[in-house]
Image (cartoon, rainbow, N blue to C red; front, side):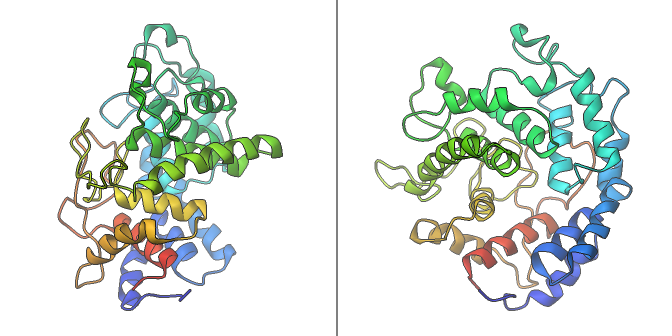
Length: 324
C-alpha cells in the first residue's frame, strides 16, 4: 500500500499546523514520525488546546454539563467521548484524576430512566446506543464496563445489529445503534486481558460488521435501494459530520472498519468512491453537517469550511483502501 496519496504533502502540512490533538494523530497515521515524537505531542493534549479546555470544564462533582448524559452534547458522556477522539492519554495523571471523579461521584440521577437514578456512571442505563457510548469511553479510559458489555452482547438481534427500539418490539437493527455498539466492542476487545472474553466479543462484533457489509453500508438488504437519511434524526448518511455522536454516516462506518482491520472489498467500494469524490481541489474535505446541540468547546471548522477532522479521517480511510 502506498505511503501517500497524490497531493498529500500540502494537506498534511495544513493538518500539522493545528491543535496537539490533531497533530499527534497526523504524525502517527500519515507520516513516518517515531513513536517517541508521537508520544511527546500526544502528551500535550492534556495541557494545550481543546483537550485542556475540556478538562477545565469538569465540575468538582465529576460532571460536565451538570449531567451524566443530556441531549446537548456537553454532558459527562459526551465530553469523555470527545477526549477519547482527541486522544487524551488514558494513563496520564490528568486523565486518571478526571475519570476517577466520574467513576466515584457521577450517577444517572435525573437523566435516564428513574430506575437507573442510582447507577454509577460506568454502569450505564437502559438504551443500547447510550450504553455503547458509555462503554466506549469506559473501555478507553480503563474502567470496568463488563456489565455493559454483557448487556450489549445479550441485546444483539438475529440480523447481527442492535436497535434502541428493540425494547418496544422492533426486530430489525438500526445503523445508528449498531455503529455505536461496534465501536464499544472493538475498544473493549482491544484492552481486555481475558482471551475467552475477547473471542466472544469478537464473534459478536464480526456478526455486527456483517450487518453493515451485507447492506454495503447504506443500502436496504431486501431491495438494494440506497438509504439516504436516518429516519429518527434526519441525518444524511453521505454528509460527513464531526463529532458524530450517535449518528451514523459512511465516513464513520469506513473509519470503524479500518480500525477493525477488515480487508476492503467490493462491499465498501461504493462508499470509498464517495469519500474520494468529496476531496476538494485544495486536497481537503469540508465539514458537511453539524448535529444540533451545544458543543462544550469548538474543535473544528464551521459547516461548509475545510475540516481538519474530516480530512484526517478521510485520508486514513483512503490509505486503508489504497485509493487515490
